[in-house]
Image (spheres, rainbow, N blue to C red):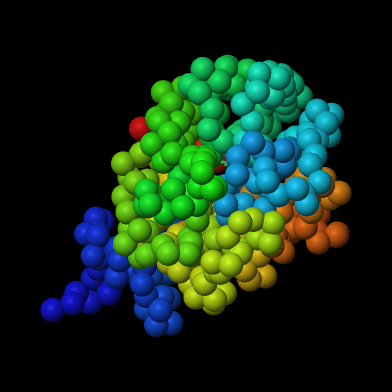
Length: 369
Ligand code: SAM
């Protein structure tokens, strides 16, 4: 006989079949029960704070050709940019002054020595300029700069002034090896190997980082069992933070013809994935992705209501935002949509949470490891 949902939701561990059942929920009353349990567990384990990571998209130059991504190397329609060091430092200082507590630095993937050196130098300067009374060890920093070597990760950690607390977000995109290959395969060339991604995540752990990973949800050909395997992989990696969001087609990418799930279905599946990840990973940080907001105007609020405790407002200067179109109609690209603490405070208050201002908001899993 099938277990009553209320009983299932109270469990601390789940079989693959139970996780698949929760991920597949569609009946509004059942989805609400899952949402309420994930929200209550987040409050119980992590409290009411939602932490901010001011997202700075520092460059859209990329040497990779991921088939889903609008800034992949072969999309020649994109105007390429790299923000100047001064612009990035100004964004970081503004974030520190406004109480963000942390920033996330994201770019396309590059491994040339000049870039590696430039990032190290940038990290040193951000640290020097953002130490203040409220942030005695400077801003928290999450890097999202793709696959690098152990030595590079270590080098950047030391440059950051916070060698044992730097964070890195490197999504596995999908733990299904066949799907991963199809997402990264251009004719005659296998661009990425899932095993390399796992090694990079291990290297990040050894190099002392708080390790973040995640997947895209609703990829063409992805099954519920794949999503269960994704959560099992987060467990195996013992991730400190999870950043995942819906897959949205991009006209500049190579997968438009494969389509995407209908919006309402994709939204519910993404929210179920956030909630089930909260139930299974418990004390990790989970970020409400911008892609949720692109699907639905209040997407991030729904993310928080389903167990997210981090939001990543885009603080990239307005003029370059439209050149960082990972997918179509990316939220935050419309003119005038400047991020600020008041806007974020509204979002969080609607979800009956409060902003963790001037706090690093490191993952509890990492703190208690
Ligand atoms: N280069 C770094 C990397 O690969 O980790 C960081 C930048 S990359 C553009 C950041 C993330 O954007 C990827 O991990 C991917 O999951 C997400 N992304 C790219 N295209 C997407 C799409 N069409 N829909 C949803 N997310 C997408």
